[in-house]
Length: 169
Ligand SMILES: [Zn+2]
Image (cartoon, rainbow, N blue to C red; front, side, top):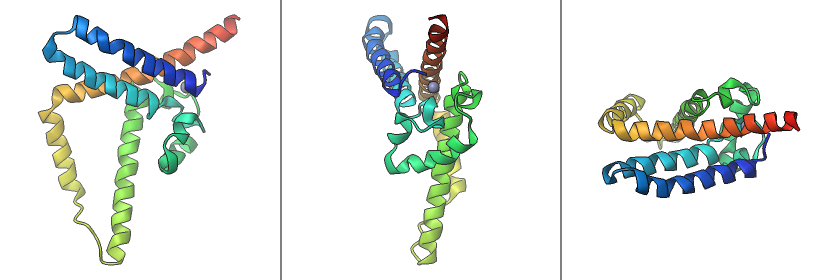
């Protein structure tokens, strides 16, 4: 597979290349949505890389929080459809991350409760607020999803092209 650096440069290069195109081809009112999609695409390629399924530079980039991705690595075989599948990969990683962060927050809150410092955490009201937010900002949510999926797709296509080229040579 191409190195993490190659993936990073392709992500950053294509994102930077897309910014002037939005100015040339999109009406002014749609440009902020396109920029949101480009930001999401960059985040997807750099931070939510498909190679989080292995000890990669993307994994190390998370610093101490990389521990959050350890169960993912154990559960997901490298380059399987779960991590590298078009569309599926990044969406599952976002769902996984939300799940892990929720478990982490609830766990910390439980520990704080043991010493009488519990915060008022109500997962049910969080969920309702998140659902409200998604319905209020539907266009923005779509821009984020499109960016996420495109970031994962760019990674998988590069992996695929690299494997093909290696076989051909
Ligand atoms: Zn890969």
